[in-house]
Image (cartoon, rainbow, N blue to C red; front, top):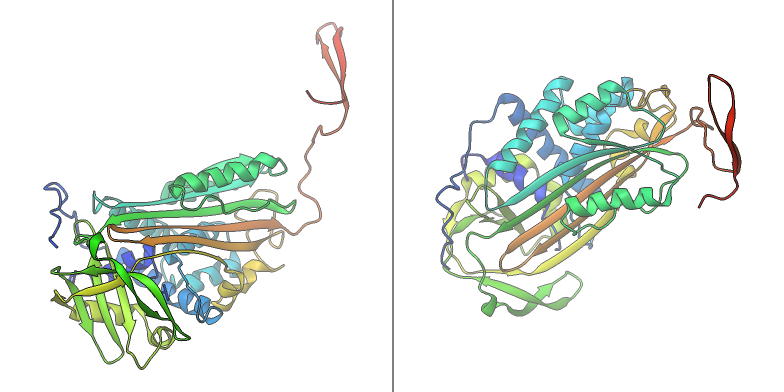
Length: 414
């Protein structure tokens, strides 16, 4: 755990930014030894930048949510933005790059790092379920740019599907995919497809892990939780005789609870009684959490943790504008690398929606998140297409002779 402090923080933040106002060891299977390897320089840089983005994103979201529960997956948001990045150009692409903190990495390095990182996360613990799925849905008969398709398919394993966005079933098709990828925890992310929508880029992540040291359900009992504005009664779980990482400082108490074969964990940080979670968050960073984890020692102190379940939904438009990518949402956006027939200024992002779910109980934790990026056209009309959407006449004829064999009129489809 101490060996890879940044990786530990990344895994935690990928499944749960758990800064929310939110006894015997179970032996791991003999064949579940962690298949760890040294991180490449590109992977290490990707993790570092993703972690930095995680804290910047979380702090910005928290600015408008003081006193509220928050739960986000920075990993999901960053992955969805990377898909959009692959279709962006000029200054729009530069702003997304800077927002994600991608530095001097080339496009190929960025995408291949996400690809190898996901492969590492997926196979590192056979008792933990971790999945990340990507999809791109576009309005028929539009055609995505070939390079955009190839890059997102090759590196991010994104499904590419054309749909009739005007059909009432299109929304249900997309939401069904979301529901499947989140194991039913997020049933839908799309409320409606508007006429100006031409593409949706969606990332879905799902995590389910069992504690190495499970809490005894018989010991779960009501306890006081001080919200800052009052005290409420809530079920608290109790853990006794277990081993976990603990670090105490002037401003905090950090506890790191492992799952499965101990590669995944949940890191919980409690502010000093004289401070608040918001105070703690204002000075928190990926580097600081990494330092605390590296300095943490094993502890067996009795631990009390509230059971909780959270569901959150956030519009991230203003958050991402404030973080440095306003152009993507305006008339100067350049997503000319996304769809053929569209040029710079024709497309922009209309909405970045993030939905999340987490449940923590005596057995472990389950978490899911979806990030949906809706791309709309800013031109008055879509590229020309033909729709037989009113009564029409049709013929069946033989071409060599010109003979008309059948003739009809469709006034009402049946």
